[in-house]
Image 1 (tube, rainbow, N blue to C red):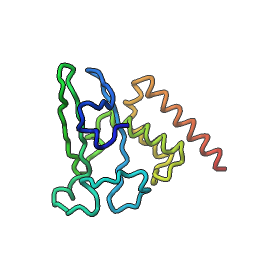
Image 2 (image 1 turned 90 degrees about the vertical axis):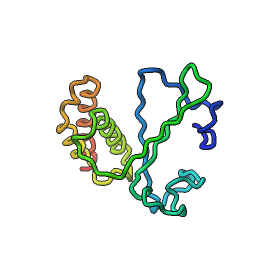
Image 3 (image 1 turned 90 degrees about the horizontal axis):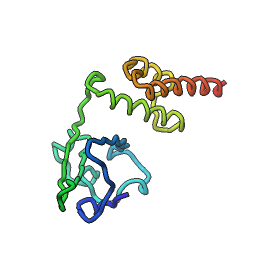
Image 4 (image 1 turned 135 degrees about the vertical axis):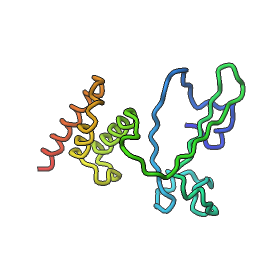
Length: 160
């Protein structure tokens, strides 16, 4: 894991990713007003810390994603920054890969009986998966559908 102060240091390497590869990262977003175990939250003053002076634009932001990369033939890195606005979109606007990632993350939360599942259940996850049946075109993804159905059955049995 890369320390925060090392993010801008081109001598530090956080990992390699080859051309044409992609990575999906899932982040838990904790609103500033929510109490969180301080050991899990960076202690440095960051953009969205509660005590920082409020800016109008910050209130419209959900997060900022910063990605630093170094081209194979370069010695210095380039920083890409993308602001994610706090806007509600529609399910139709989401890519299939995003929907798939949400399904996998939801399944993991259900299996762990996470306190963060909110009102999600095996039934609601199965309903969402059935609404997006186009995901079943991939055999590996179709296999997960079966696993979720099996886990839902087992969870229902264990409740009785």
